Amino acid sequence: MSETAGLNETHSGLLSHLKELRRRAMIAGGVYVLGVAVLMNWSAPVFNFMAAPLLSALPAGTPMIFLGAPDVFFTYLKIALLGSLFITSPVTFYQMWAFIAPGLYRHERRLFIGSVIGSVFLFSIGGAFAYFVVFPLIFQFFLGFATENIHALPAIREYLSLFMKLLFAFGLSFEIPIILILVTRLGLTTPERLAGQRRYVIVWAFIAAAILTPPDIISQVLLALPILVLFEIGLLLAKAGNKTPEKTQKEQQAG
Image (cartoon, rainbow, N blue to C red; front, side, top):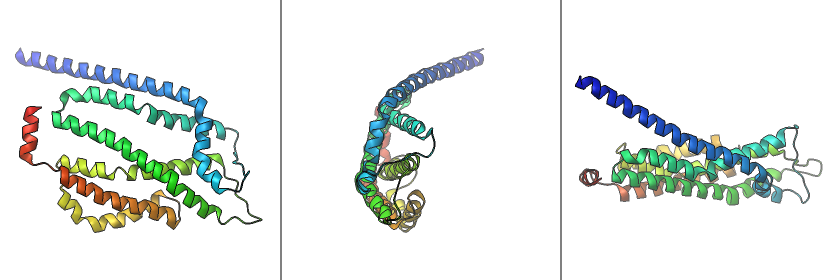
């Protein structure tokens, strides 16, 4: 009898968690859809901002073109979809936090909040580095091959694809310090073990840069070098924040 009651209680608790998860997912999803609808009205000026590094490298008065009738619409739609993802991310993270926070220890809550804030900050830094440093350099390099008989008329769809690819490549590469801190704090590895893999990291940094960037040496080097620098920064932060098991156990008991 008691076993049946225990099963019923477990089942009831699971249903309660699933309902809570569904409610918070619907809130986050609803806010995201609303953000998409609002940003569709601002996609044109956002795209103009995104295209500024390319347009500044083109001869004055050179337009951007579209090759298919739906290209402009779908370009603006993609901008709204991705823009809403970033703008509504505080709501999404809050709903996620409110769902998982009751089951976390105090030190785990601090780790989660710090990871989210740090990830958003570093991704933004990576995107800014790509926009203000990398884009002007690679566009000047590519467009430098134009001649009197060969003119560049960039298409908006292809440009958006390249822009997003590079933006996410640099944004994600700047997350390396957060990743190293997390894997060491969670006990998956140690800073010393990571430091021993440095020679492999150098090789994989240039391989990843070759895959994620256009086939030019400038963008590849500009991605690989920050990866290596951020790896070293992540190691230093991981060593500084590495806690002893005894201290972690005390924090778990206090939480």
